[in-house]
Image (cartoon, rainbow, N blue to C red):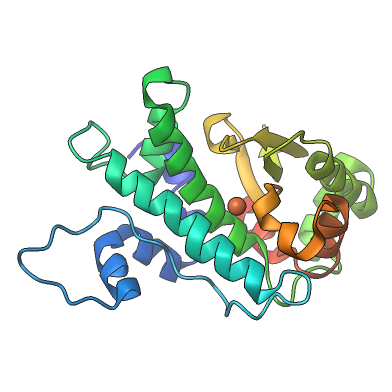
Length: 241
Ligand code: FE2
């Protein structure tokens, strides 16, 4: 494992339960489906990691209806597509992160990149939210925000701007870029994992993330997430300040 892979290994950016589930995708797939494992079955290489909370826990900011569709249909769909696309390819036995980084920018493997990155991005998004999120960041993260943005409020405003100025589908991210905190956005499935940055947290700004609850009011969704559900502790853990 290279230093880059170690740095972005899911055990560093997601909790151990999630990491173990990602690693044991086959077992997770069977468990999620409630199916028995049989000798004849060919396990899927990648599973759908469990949510770190119940699907009702983010309401009213993100309702159970949105969460159940987003996780159960969209995230599961990307997992299913990835498992359909990679058998027999050079990606078949790679970790999710390696699939993302190796397929990035390869025009022959766009579908594999899109689905692998969306699996990773969504798992990272669920951990970027918390039923007890929002409010003031922990002191070490707040200090870093003041250093690099001038204030916590300016950092929050930069994240809001990154989320609301992304035309069409994509993601807003708080990242470390060469040791500096930045708010950036990416289009479609693109991810800072392939840009030499360390992702700290993300907000999904695809319409499926908010349309049932906020219709076309993306800004209202992002503001509510930043006020009440963003998981600053997760960002601090990833930043290793
Ligand atoms: Fe999404």
